[in-house]
Structure formats: C-alpha cells, structure tokens
Length: 243
Image 1 (cartoon, rainbow, N blue to C red):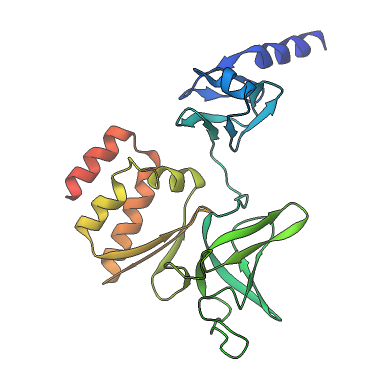
Image 2 (tube, helix red, strand yellow):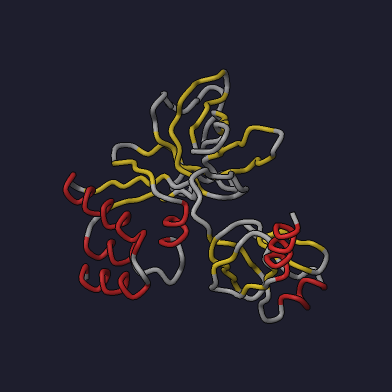
C-alpha cells in the first residue's frame, strides 16, 4: 500500500511540456500557462482538466497547444464523444416521427429533424431513407440528452452539408482525422492536385470519398489511411511524389 501511494504521488507531481507524451495525473508545464490559468485565459480541451490554477492531464497521449491559450491531449480514441459545432458523417439507421436517428459512432445515435435542412418545410420534406449517408454538424450535446444533428449553418444555409449520394464511406481513427485536418498538413491539397475527387471528413472518424471512377476512389482512400503512421517528413515526401 505504501509503495502504491508513493508511485501515484510521483506521477501527480511530475510535469509535462507541449509535444511530449503525457500520462493521467501529470501537470501541464508550458510557457505562460500558469499565468494564463490564473487569469482564466486558458481554454482546456479534451484530455485535460483544471484544478485551481493547475491544468492536469486526464488521458494518455501527446500534449498539443494552439496560440498559447488552447491546450489538449491528442490521444488514440476509438469512441467519438460528440462536441458542439463539430462536423460529422453519419448513416441514417431509423425513422422516428419527425426525426431520423443517425449513427455517428458515439454512445447514442444522433437525432436529425426533417426541418434541419435548407428549404425544408412541413409540406416540402427532404427525401431521406434508412442507409443514407449525411454530413452535418452537432448542435445539442448534453450527457443527459441524445445528441442532435443539423445540416444547415446558423444562417439556414446548407454549406455542403446534407445527404451524400454515391461515393465510398470508410472509418478512420479520430487521431488520423485531426491529423489530416490540420492547416499545415499537405495531404488533402496534394490529393486534390493528383485526383479529381470530393470528400467529407467527419470529426467522428467517418470519411466519405467520391471520385470519377472506383480506382481513383480507392487510391484516395488508401492514401488517407496510410497517413496514420507517417511522420511529418514521410508525409511531405509522400505528397511531393503525388504532385
């Protein structure tokens, strides 16, 4: 018992920096984070919790930061935890009155109202069937309620959201999705130069790809999945060969 307590104190007392692998209980020790935390100017993302003026890791992964104010842990996760305003790709699994149930790889299926489409009215309902693939954004996220999905923005415009026809749907890790959606990741622009394709990448790890022929669709899908284990240098070399 004494040894276990001392080991736990050692983990809790250790610190971690941006770019390093963190363990649950470690304290974030980044430049300026302590002063910003005292002034409540730090945005704590997934994998981190705030205790007083300290930020402690609650997941195992790599510590990331943005603009010196946003901190999160980039961890390998299998289940998607819905977050407000995140774009997701889901599959309609059930019709239920005025709602559709959409599988978004979360603990509960998301609800999609038939009026959550551009131009939809009670007389002009969108044609959605079980098995259709939709791309939308999360708007209602609560631990006590089912998540809710819409296919319009705040102004009522669809902005490329809605039912996705044709194409190929596959699953990827949440880590890979966050990796390829970073601004400095050259993968998607390079694929756009080499192939004529469309894609919808959901933060829930579901990706939809549609190209002019099946061979190009499979090539784009395999290229995205292969980026999972690539280092930044390997990824840049891979993208240079595509162009």
